[in-house]
Image 1 (cartoon, one colour):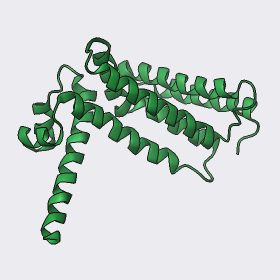
Image 2 (cartoon, helix red, strand yellow; image 1 turned 180 degrees about the vertical axis):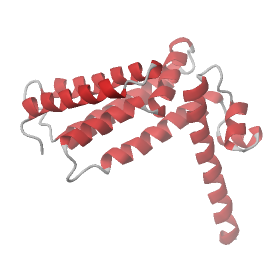
Image 3 (cartoon, one colour; image 1 turned 90 degrees about the vertical axis):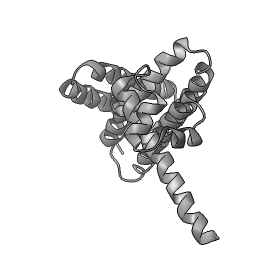
Length: 196
């Protein structure tokens, strides 16, 4: 019986993963209003029933999707530990806010601002992700938050990255983004000491 169950569990896990990836892509491309469970199911290549088997509601699907991709990005950031230079860390932190995850998360934020049932879930998710990203940034940058101004500088870096993400929504801002990232590396070097 275990041999039969394992492939079924694997198929179920793969279906769930495809749904989560399709949900992020739909949310980033079509926004909240254009991202229904049916649209996501079609993009994932599964039936609407299969989608609803994994996620009872639209809110369940999209909250889980943003959480899934946030965890993937967190894993990528954790992989930077070791010989990564400060510029690479800053670039990766900025990438968190300039890719499809941020675009999808932004759509959820907007929807949560007027959909009461979604607001507490998105607020809790964003608070958790925000704390985790801040903690990873502190670790990766080798920042000592007991030093006055260091915590605010790290948070300023993350706020700046979010702002770059907003700018990227409307135009390709890559050239300016590179200059801003380089400037933040110099700021961090000044506040945290020489680059690791």
